[in-house]
Image (cartoon, rainbow, N blue to C red; front, top):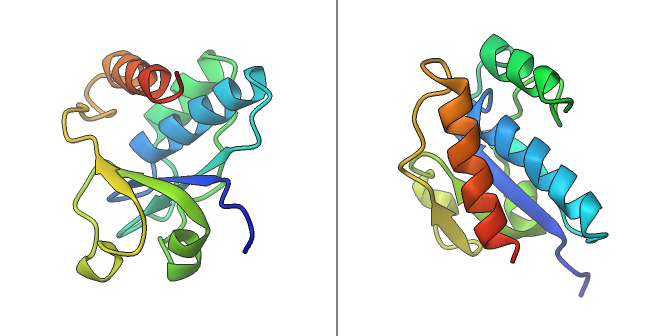
Length: 128
């Protein structure tokens, strides 16, 4: 059986919170020389990434891990060591992998910096 080394971040639109979380997770994983990497997915993906998320990440010196929002699939779930969602997951995915929900992150469209800082704090705690 292959090692599951993917962390899947999921938000409703796959355009902001999951993008920020995956970008920062991947940066922290590289700094720790970890074999883990993150992807961003959406349950109902938008057609493009959030402009506020993209602009904020670029200001922070990071590149979004996806060019456009991607829909969560069973293949993503099967490859995941863990799923972290910012929204309700579709019922068919609930028992497929370890999963946590981070409900308390504010909307990126309202305050990128606060959302980013809260996501970073959770990532740092997770990666200890």
